[in-house]
Image (tube, rainbow, N blue to C red):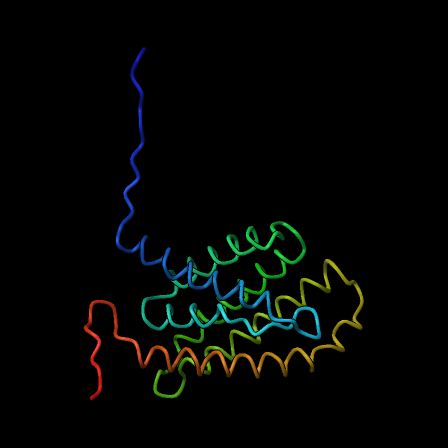
Length: 183
C-alpha cells in the first residue's frame, strides 16, 4: 500500500443536518443564557430548553435527547467549563429533565402540552441538580433550604419557556410545509 492513501467519507443525512441545526440554535440560546446576570448561582432561564421542547413536540424524544446532549457538550466547551462541576450539574439536570419529558410526553395531549412539559422538565432539572450538589458538592441537608427558591424559579421559567415554545411551534410551519402569510 505504498503511495496510496485511504480516506473515509462521512455522509450527513438529512436528519443529521436537522439535528445539527437544532443543536446550533440550542447552543446559541445557551450562550445567551450564560450572558444574563442572575442574582443566584444555578438559577437560569434555560432558554435552550425551548428548542428541546419544540424538537420533542415536532419530532421525537430521541432527537430531543441528541439536541440536548450536543448542546451540553458544545456549550460547555465554548463556555470553558467542560468536565467542571458546572458541566456535571448541567448534564445531570438535563438527564433528569429528559427522563421526565419521556414520561410527560405520554400524557394525553388534550390536557398536557408544551407548557406542562416545560414545567415538569424544569422541576426535574432542578431536582437532579440539587441531588447531585447534595451528594457531591455540598454534603449538608441545609442545601434543601433553597428548594422553595429553586422551585419558584423552575415554575416561572418553565412556564415562560413552555409558552414561548408553544407560540413558536404554532407560528412555524412543519418541516416541508410552506409558510402561509396572513393578509
